[in-house]
Length: 376
Image (tube, rainbow, N blue to C red; front, side, top):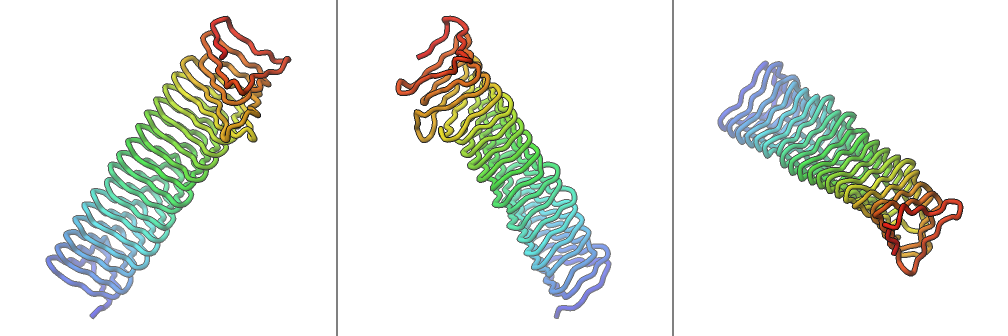
């Protein structure tokens, strides 16, 4: 029969069974082998460790540490509060209530399921493990390494979230506050992001389902970023074959595309500073003609391409108000109205559809550098 237990240390080994009500242990509880511990009352005070193929079914735990390894299974029907939490070597932990801890670690094929809210005061480290969290997560830092999987609702991180290797992060709630970085061939599918920076590297794929708001967006080495809603950034920089696609409106201070990268914008474009398309890169503006494209300066550098193709197709055209400096190639499938100061440098090309027209104000004439400019 279950009973209350008070003891400094408790050890279960072999094929032991332990049925308890409340348990208070000031030092340690160690479960190993094929042992089973079922508690119907609160467990407090102990450093708890479990290994082997042991099974723990606990009502609620407040402890200094919880360590599970080597296929141990622990299920908690209420809440967990611990200074440190470690699940490793194929162990499994499931908590239906809230989790409060200083640090959380899951690694080497282990599985962590937290149905309630998770609050961490220092960090979470997931290394080759799976963390399923339908509840909200608050943590200063989170890192996913190797082939980790992380399924979350809302996530709030005040410092950083780092994703690497072949890791996967899928979030169905808002992500706020963090400097987010991802590398390797990791995959991120996020509901909506408000962060200080988003850095994507080395083949990473990031899809933001609603909106993205960040101070700095950086994508390099073949990384891909797709935003199905709006994007609000201070600076965006694409390098080394990376791509950025925005289905909604874009608001930015500066956008720079270089070294074989691609920027595709399908909504309104409002850049208060410079748009620079350079170094064998491509910008595709599919902005509907009912919306606007604004900037201070638009530069299309040598060996780079700007394609202006409104969706849906329209000949009503774009009005480009600002400095337009073309040294590369510009192809337009709609009327261009240069309100600012367009300048075609030597070696540049400007191609337009016969059904459209190129117009510019008489007060701001089109400047052609020399005869080595192609207009077709």
